[in-house]
Image (cartoon, rainbow, N blue to C red):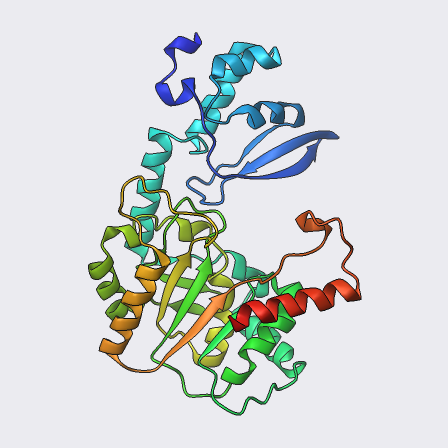
Length: 334
């Protein structure tokens, strides 16, 4: 097949978000391309040397020019593009169709399935025992007044449990609220506005349903811009990782889950339909006053990312730790 016979989105291909990972087979290196949204159950695996092709699929270079630049056989490039397209890793009608099907499936089930929080344990009892142990190893912060909101990480449990346990300690053995608002970080999503979830979230301890009384009002007031990128929640861990801690403290209580965009990146005004953070906060505040009841808040944030794994050449010594803590405290005080 000549390049000219390819559909338009393969003539100038553009990659969607993906997570590469290395593996070996028969002592030969390969690269897996994982779709964080899991639009299909298939994971593309390519020879390591073929990853140079992937790096050139930028939405600004034609597939024909990619082949010419690499001296690659056209049929091999075309075959790779078709494989990527079949699982939704390229922008275009295939990915759009798969995304629509995925959203319809999620809405019909009414819940985002267990993903990241599954690392806590294989059964609910095992998870509860682990959380109990971590709380027992945590010092009581002894706050003088009730805590209404916390800032806690969305780090993996093995490294982050001291932070989670310290943040949630004061909510143990307290009266459950009517709802918890969880504000997550949108790591992989494509939405550049606030993304409100209209369905529940699951963990090994059960399902926290969406507080429809609040969510429905938000959706009505803000319009489809607040929920149009719902698929972003399917790839996100920043909300799910908090569920077991909330469920340990309060059970499967209703939540208002929203992904907040990067405040340092301006919104792309391409359709005027997305919801800004200020719009969301103002609407949420008025609606919560209207519905009443007790609301607690969780800001899912990792604060500073430091160290060589995040591209910092400076070592994380005692002075660096001191500087980071001072910076984080100053930011939270603003």
